[in-house]
Amino acid sequence: MTRPSQSKIPFVAFGLLAAVITALVYLPALGNGFVDWDDHVYVYENKGLALEGLDFLRWALTAVVSSNWHPLTLLTYVAEYSLWGMDPFGYHLVNVVFHAVNTFLVFVLGSMLFRKVLWEEERTARTGAVFAAFIAAIVFGIHPQHVESVAWVSERKDVLSGFFFLLSLILYLQQAGNSERRLLYWASFASFVFALLSKPMAITLPAVLLILDFYPLKRLNGPKDLKSLLSEKLPFLALIPAAAFLTVWAQHGDKAMATIEASPIAERLDVATRGFVFYLEKLVYPVDLAPFYVRPLEGEFYNHVFLLSLIATALITGLALVFWKRRSLAAAWAYYVVTLLPVIGLVQVSDMAAADRYSYLPSLGPVFFISGVVGMLVLRRPGRLVPVAVILLPLLVFSGLLTVRQVAVWKDTVSLWTQEIKVFPTAQAYMKRARAYEAEKKFAEAAADYTVVINNDGEGRSGLYMRRALAWKNAGAGESALSDLSESIRLSPGNYRAYLLRGELLMGSGELAAALADFEKALELSPEDPAALYYAGAAHERAGDRERGLAYLRKAADMGVREAAERLEGR
Image (cartoon, rainbow, N blue to C red; front, top):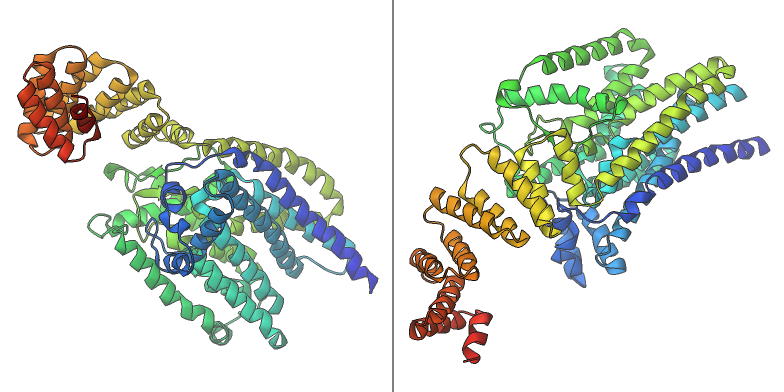
């Protein structure tokens, strides 16, 4: 009776070690702030978090945030808001803890899977299985491809849904085929429900259970078995239509789901084919990770990248069929494909081609397969354990260093879009970084980024020159601001705000006559604008036309312009 308890000590220790290493690698994330990319709608501008009583529960159950319905995720934010308000440290801490726990669960799941495949009574076999599970867990834990899911506060849904997804699989494996363990079956089902309430991507879990039945459980060997196993999973399957409906409802409510006209089927097939290979490429070679992977341009569809991706996908599928009797490659590939299907691009939700966060759970397919191969090598020749570990150690250290560097990308909004510009120097990325610079009061840097946007915009747009003019104004470059405002007016003569801002700058530089002309033009275009009334009143008063100036100021004061009221009171 003592041997089992003794063997469990190193088993738990290896899982805890993987979790602790993961947490240490992600410690720098605790110093990160929020980023102006969904964090504002989920947390720091989300008024729902401050609701009290049953109001917050009602809000969490019905709210659609950023085109998503995931009430359990929102409830975690509510709980955190009550603990540490808007301090980003706490939100990052919870994400890191969940990811570390998920790493431990990956170890447990891997141990159970490899036990079915590798474990015998011999000690060497147990060593191979535990070693394989540890490799899978540590790769999952510290791989830079998962940084987005952990270091981004808004991706709480990934780590939370991942926790319940993994827990559901573990509970299912513990009871599979044993009618005396029905409590574990319903616990697995409850975990599936919680996973769906955290993120609808968990909708693939029933299919994953069938894959586990195929391998390593080997309960699925023909049509008769399939019918029986589908019947066994009816409660799981019954949730799929409801989850799909709620997802489509949330996406359509915010008009986030692309129409066929906007994203034709042919383009979706191209993006999907590229995606299956793209995530494998980033798993093996995790460099140039970006927050926003740009979709191919119209002329780039079905080019050499698509053809290479199609060949690679067909090759892996062919190998899975060739080695069908061994089942392991077929099961790993099926898991990878199935779990990616909701986000591979067939249902186009945004104009992204891919996202690192989408690989959080799907990557386990290839990771478990490769780790299993390593475990088999160690099992057949235990003497290989040390040389294999020596080879893997520098690779894991390098992966950890890449993860630390990638965590720094999510430190703030500027660093986030700086990374995007390094990989995809699009006008959209420069625009986002310019706004982030403005929020940090780095106006000269913002103006430089707006310059890139304007240069990429062909003839330019009036609004872009207005934005750069404001940045130049706040940077103290009045002449540059005046030049941009004049160009904005040339492109859009009806832009009263440009006249108003140019008039303000002209008045500040002593060019009162020119300023008055701009203020009058602004009032002509927008007679009831309070700011135009105020500045026109101040300018006329300064020019000596007190009667007209006071008339404008009184009207502005009546409309709530505090400065106008103060100016009148000072008379």
